[in-house]
Image 1 (cartoon, rainbow, N blue to C red):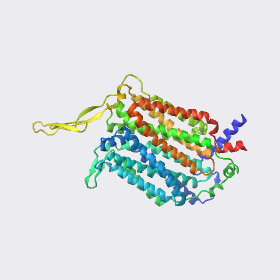
Image 2 (cartoon, one colour; image 1 turned 60 degrees about the horizontal axis):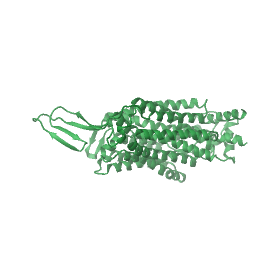
Image 3 (cartoon, rainbow, N blue to C red; image 1 turned 30 degrees about the vertical axis):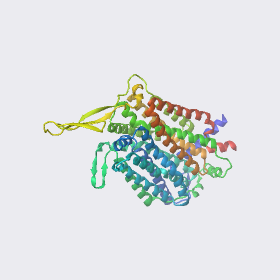
Image 4 (cartoon, rainbow, N blue to C red; image 1 turned 180 degrees about the vertical axis):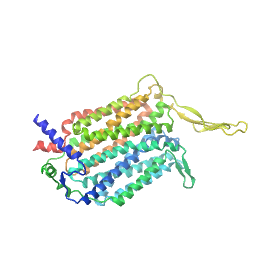
Length: 527
């Protein structure tokens, strides 16, 4: 009993460090007020950089499938998985390169260079329709370079780790992960807001510009990247937090512990580190599956058009984003009463339920894809398009033109499972989205905070790089997995194994529960 109480007391001390306000007055830092303001201004710019980097991934997620079909009719769901995975693959390759660059040169250099690549790649995405052939490969290339530019995540985390004291580090790392998760979730909200532009939009032939609901998010991403570069050039300054570790609080005790731990011989629990990386991989793997499949799934299940799928999924994800903001706020309150392991276990449990709900059941089956005829004007020459390739035209009497266009809606006949697997009811889909909006942010934020506690006050750059790589790997493999499995076997074999993977995370947490503890608790036990 005494050991449990001591562990709870130490856990509370760690939570105090994690949730401490940036403007905490418990101790006096070895810097002036102006230096503190400049330092936190630079850190907040890193928050913004992380947020914009995440938006670059998610802002086109709900429209990338219909846009891919529009620019290249040879693309299929399988290729969609590679297009989405290209972002994370580029990020996984670039992260160690930019991280090494920042070790030898001012961090401003890799930051500006990476964001410039991101801007150029977004512009390429907006112009992918202009190429005469192989448009889908240009889209793949643009997403890969957008991800490559997002490799500055390693630079952002290493800078924040170096610009904060040991007492501040956990809180700032948690804020970074919250900024990243928020960008992933709120990106589709911006996409939904742009559906009003329409699939045609406006064009400027002089520069081959087409501004529509598919390209506008990419150009917005380029604009935000330019704004980010301006802020880095104008306001970002290099800061070192080594001197800040000489913090002395009013009680003279808690603030001295990190210095003692930093020089201690107690090693980091590598088994706990590997376990945390696996749990974080599963978190992002599950969320990547949901993000990737949302648009094709709703188009197949509910016979939505591309525009409807983008709009409705965007609106739904706006609601999920607002829900996640509330969850982020609640985490800081709930974490004072429940330890991180309990919250993480609860988050995985909610994720399991959310994907279990998506398993199809019942006796209603998807509508098989057919050609819907829509009247666009009033009289005339009638043009009917079959499969958007061949056409037949009748002319009546010299009347004003009547144009009937066709759009294939429903579940494609080449997906044989459409004939024998029931639909996922809209209530199921919405309920699952709501639960994912609870489980994902909890798992994401708590994974980072618990990981930082396991690492303790010792340098975390290399270990945070591992965590970033595991997340990028999950966002690479998740879309590839879902695109290969869904088109061949349908939602049952997509979400069934996902439930199994999340359940494996819950079992792993149960087995490793006693080892997933903070460095301070281990240090106290050794003493």
